[in-house]
Amino acid sequence: MIGPQKSTCVRDQSAGSFPLASCNAGSHPVAMKIATFNINNVNKRLANLLAWLRTARPDVVCLQELKSTDADFPVEALRRAGYEAVWRGQKTWNGVAILARGMKPVQTRTDLPGNTADKQSRYIEAAVNGVIIGCLYAPNGNPQPGPKFDYKLAWLERLIRHARALLKAGVPVVLAGDYNVVPTPFDIYGTHSYDDDALVQPKSRAAFARLIKQGWTDAIRALHRDDRIYTYWDYMRNRWPRDAGLRLDHLLLSADVAKRLVASGVDREVRGQPNASDHAPTWVELRDVAATRAKGRAAVAPTMRRPLLVIDGDSFAHRAYHALPKTIRRDRNRPAGAILGFANMLLRLYQAEQPRAVLVAWDTLEAPTYRHDALESYQGGREFDDELVEQLKIIPDFVAACGFANAKGAGYEADDFLAAAVAREEKRGGTVLVASGDRDTFQLASERCTILYPVRAGEMARIGPAEVRARYGVDPKQVPDFIALRGDPSDRIPGAIGVGASGAADLLRRYGSLKAILAAGRFKTQAEDLRLYRAIATMDPKAPLPRIADQKPSWEKAAALARKWQLRQLSKRLDAMSSAAMSSAAMSSAAMSSSAMSSAAMSPSVMAKRPGASR
Image (tube, rainbow, N blue to C red; front, side):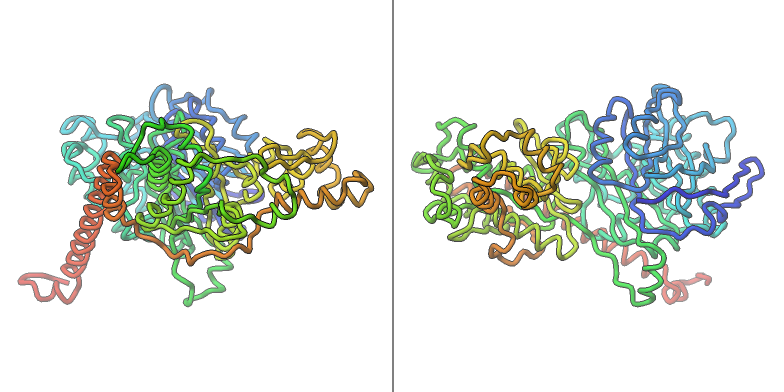
């Protein structure tokens, strides 16, 4: 957390001067995570905002479209969440704010210079830990042509002039917000429906390009040159489920800040939550200055950080089998409900999370594990329908056809492969999403691992350490101890006699662990049993895994398999995903070629060869 610091920043807006280098003067520029989020009504979506803040833990957040007056801004709720704020509200429309975790942002501007008659709340600026943060909400500009588009272009011109002055001041700056500009055709899904929209007009794009040309770094595109990344999905026409998005939200970095850039991304999953904004949070991570200097010229180039998605295959296959009608059949009238339900879940998760790779973990039904050998009652009484078992055998074929990995092995449960994948990915510095309906997986929650837990049809709760503590009153690492004490009826683990959930949590808060509880002389007659229950509840992070390199989905192979199984709607969905992927790749290639040709055309050697060209 960024600690509170005394500020010596003084800003005289009327003088037009920039004594910005003195903001937080002498402070050591530490590692920071800076995000921008068009919240689209901060009070209506306060719960969504607070949930994201708990999970993502950004150090600085730029909010747009507050749609709140200054008096109604939820400053106390944000303060309880650990954030101080400066803001400029406006009733019904617009409104911008800057939040800082653990410290008060030092406000330096409350408007964009250049038009004193402009009363719209679209720009605010503050210093946080030695960096000037400009939070902006550019005008939409529709309909165009017309006065609204003229206002948009004039506003962007004012931004360009102010941005130039900031660079001239020689201070670290991040300009973050909703620019309401789609920079290139690569930043929008394949469509003609936006052709007349102000977001994509040549004049809008030219203004953004002139801004970049001043020397700003587009943090998302700097690290994700070949990736089609969106930050906004309209509520209309099913655009979120279709991933029909646009990139409107940008973080532009001055040259000295760009040297500290280590990661950037979009928290897409936030857009899929109930009551969500139509935008998703976009963020950058900056290393501290000391680390940057230590690395010197040999600093390793930043890399993008997409999560590894790990799925409990049996959990979701079972849910699908029992949720869908048994009348769903495939070729030769064989059962297909579990296959179809699992496949749709897998595709939905992939589209929402955009992981670097997918691993699906499976139980081995025909072979017992050490847990069964150690506890005779473990998972006793479980019986599976033959039609479910038949489908469980072939769902891994669909996973492989999609280009994803499976993990299965005698002596291990799916949970063990989940734990092993989390341990491996965290060790390499990555992040993990674990999708499972088994609450045992809550023991894996960490700053780098989030559990996706199904709560109702199509909706996943995101479980991190804070959510585990809220549900059980214990930390994730204490979950095996908690299960041992409380018991687990679904797995036939008896637990401690006379101890329920609240009693187990109270004991762990007092003693810290089952080991300490037993050392204190509690449960003497059950001590060995409780140690066994804890061992059974603990996932094995040493389970053998396949290599999990970055993956490129093979939707066309999966579509062919779906056609073979005569699952027509599934094959059509996969065909559409395959076509979209190929179109995206083609547009990416075209955009890169165009960029390369443009760069070559503007190079001094080429310019010198042009008739009448001057250097």
